[in-house]
Image (cartoon, rainbow, N blue to C red):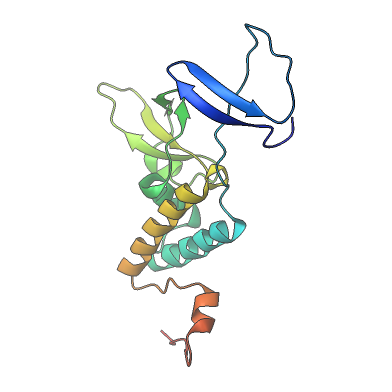
Length: 167
């Protein structure tokens, strides 16, 4: 279906009114999927996050994967299955799981567990602009705490007479 084919004109309880520029032949019992439109995060925002992540991992002397996982599990978005936060049970210890390039997860305590349990977090490729902004804001604060420059190259160029330090 084409983008923006209809707009919601009213909501009441379990009823939804939709206005459309063209007629649809819906029947009672038809299933219609309604999705909320969210602007996807920009590639520039994602690149900026990765640049800051790399600077932070160098300062902390940890791997890029571990740094990225720490940031995503601190400032990122939890993965949900329906209304329930997604968790996994595995025999992989936390120090090894922190090195994962594909799974972003944080250890959680499960009473009497005979394995490791983790809460899963979404990858940044699924973030909208607001979610990405929250992740970047947290990353900037972490960088500032380490004395890392957080301005983008564009912002640095705009500063008149700026000379990068040779730290």
